[in-house]
Image 1 (tube, rainbow, N blue to C red):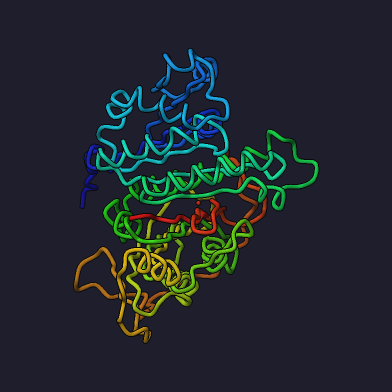
Image 2 (tube, rainbow, N blue to C red):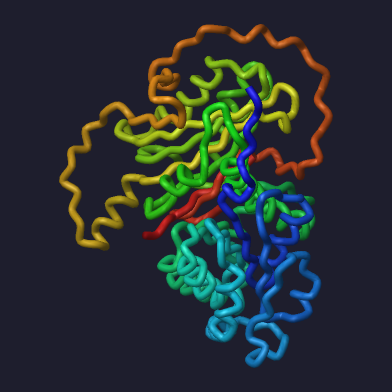
Length: 406
């Protein structure tokens, strides 16, 4: 049977918008890392910084307000600058299905401009996720206050928000790590998050996952968690799954999630049993009524013997209660746990391996392989998966947790 290749235009279009100096640095990092399937936009009041950015699309905001300089620590100036150039921003965001807005809070351009740009992205119909860094404690109370006020403004303008407290970097880097390399770790977390979602959308699978599945889990879903983990060796599947749902960077977990999407990537030797074991790790702590969407991909880009697991989870009980109180809605449904609903993108007559695993073949014992050649991917220090996160506020190994806002 011939392979059918979908038209590239059928894929969802992802745009990453770096706002201000910090956001621009993150965009440069992703371009250096050759992130695929993404369009990059840099937006800044600082003309000199913008000139050196590698993004193909650059928007200089606030030309009349700041005259090519930054916005200092004045978010009002950042907001006015974005509003002054709003039509150009909207034009650049046309056609986006998903927009990642990356910036640092505590200054002027990012803090003030991000909410305006997020509103513009949502007005174009894009699923909008903000990835925000919070200033170090040593930067002072004034910056912290500006950042917190900015977060309150931003949360009403996005579907999901990822907060990365810069202070957390100190717990995951070695004492001798340079200042530049420490921030590269933070940028890499964002890079893996964006690349992880891009891969979910663009890579065809044995059991396929697409943008509609990502949107179903992330849009208007309360809190959301996303993580990517990798594993090799005898316990590679469970190791990858554990990495994807845990991170020392965060104080959050997948417990009680009511919506979960996970995709398992492996080579031709990935067995049904390994898929089942990874799924068990991911789903054992979620709500028993949860909607689960599952995908599997044979990925030739992985190192030999490696398995990669990507997880997006949402609908956490504490967030549902909080949003119900805020909206005046009372949920009187029983909290009794039932079997989770598993959604697999395959024929209706196909077996459901996660609920009733049927192992017809056991993968032969893996022969001892020489150490695989290192890929040219930027390696994150061995602090586990990267987690996108929000709710507590921080930020695929990696895990971030998103807090989504309806």
